[in-house]
Each structure stands twice: as structure tokens, then as C-alpha cells.
Amino acid sequence: MARTPADLVRADPDPPFEITFDGRTVTALPGQSVAAALWAAGILAWRTTRHGGRPRGAFCGIGQCYDCLATVNGEPNRRACLVPARPGDAITTQEGHGRAGLAV
Image 1 (cartoon, rainbow, N blue to C red):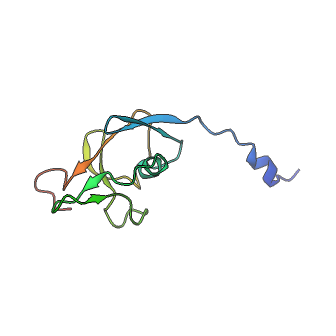
Image 2 (tube, rainbow, N blue to C red):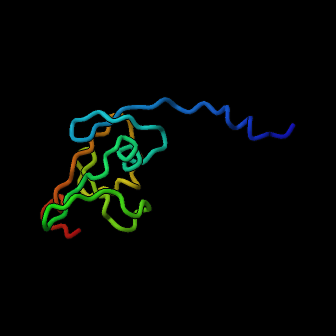
Image 3 (cartoon, rainbow, N blue to C red):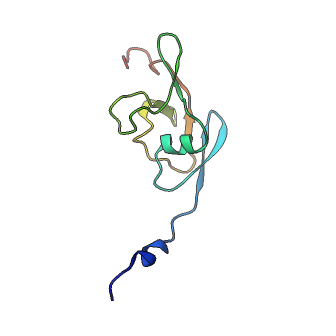
């Protein structure tokens, strides 16, 4: 018997889970990137520029531009559009380049 689109709709995804952004609880869905989870929560910026402190978030969404850098679980300079969200992740706003000596 052939599968129909209606058969595929009945997939049972894993339940949502929580991550935090600057201490605020954010709900994420299985398979979402950190950037997608933040966007879904209405958070559009999670980094400031080195010069001028201007807010940045996702720009290209495919890991090419580096605008979406965030500190994830204490590790700076993670491209939030490429990092899969995991239960309990702690994302914090990254200020500037995240650590001394790294030019981003």
C-alpha cells in the first residue's frame, strides 16, 4: 500500500523543551537552531558589534555572514543559525568579539 501525504501528517514529533536567553526561559522545538528558537520567542538580537555596540542577530540564516554569533553554554562566537538548540542550553548576549584576540 502506498503512503499518502495524510499518513505523513500523523508523525509524532518530540515535545518542546526549554532553553534560556540571558536568564529568560525560551521554548524551543526539536530540530530548531538556536537562532530559530530565539526568533520564535521574538528575540531578534543576541550580539553587539565591537565598535559602537550595535545590536545584531541573524542576517543570512545559513552560516555565511557571522552576524548571528552568540555565546552558547559559555562558548562565544557560535553561529546561532547553525547550532541546534538542545534542552537546557544557556544562550547569552555576546558583546563584541566575545574574547580577546579574536577578530570577528
